[in-house]
Amino acid sequence: MIKTYRIVSLDEIITAIPNVGSSAVYDARACVRMLLIANRGEMHSLDPVGNLWGSKETTPEFVKKVLRTASAILNGIPMSCGQLSVEVARSLRQFEDDRIKTIQKIILNPSAQLRMENSPDGAIIHPPRQTNSDRRRAFVYAYIKDQGVPVHIQEVLSALQDSEPELIPDSPTRRSAINTIANGLDRDDRFAWAGMSKWGLREWGYTSRGSSVAAAALEILRASGEALSTAQIRKELSQLYRVSSGAVSAALKSSEGVTIERDSQGLWRLI
Image (cartoon, rainbow, N blue to C red; front, side):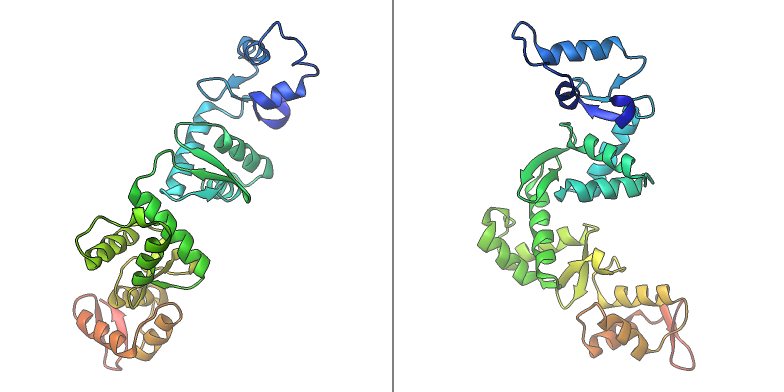
C-alpha cells in the first residue's frame, strides 16, 4: 500500500486490513505500528509517533520541508488544505498530481507546525498558535477578499468592532488603533496599499510594496522599462489605485531629483 501511494497514514493502513478490529485481545494500532517498525528497510515513519509512513522516495526531510514551506505560506493566515497543498507544491516545484496528494497528506497529519479545523468547505489549516495580530490580519484578509474591492482602513476598523472587537488594538485613540492596523497590513506581503487610505490584496495584481503614490509611481516606471509621461503614469495608477490627478503630479514632483528625473520632452524616467 505504501509503495503504491508513497505515503499513507496509520489509519489508512488499518482500514485496509480485513477484520483488523475483530479481536479485543490486542491493540490493533499498536500491533500494526510494531509491524511497520519491524520493516523499516522498506518503509519508514515520517513523524515521531508513527502515524504517517512513507516509501523510500518520501523521506522525513521532505516532510520537514513541506511543513516549513506551508508555515511560511500561511504567514499567520488560515487557508484551505487544498489551496495550501497546491501552493506548497508550486513552491517546491512538485507539479505531479500524486506529489500534490502526498503533500496534502503531510499537511493533514497532526503536527507541531500546523493545526487543522474542519469546516463546511473542507479542512482549514491554521498556524499552531496565533497572536492577536495574526488573528487580526487573518480577519482583515478574509474581509477584504469578501468585499472584492479595496477597503478603506476606517471600514476595516468598523468591521473589527462589529465582528471581532477583541482584536482591536489596545490603543488610546481611534487614530492610533488605525495606525497599528495599517502598520500590520504594510508588513504583510498579502496586503497592498491601494491609495486614499484603502487596502487591497496583492493577489489582485498590485506590485508596489510601498504605501504612497510616489512608491506606486516608481514601481510603474520600473516595470515599464521606459520613460513615461505624467498622463501615462496617472492612467496606469488608476487601474488599481484610488488616487487623484493632483496627488500623482505632486508625488512625481516630490520625487524629482531623488529617484526619478524628467527629460526635455517632459517624460519621467528612473535615475
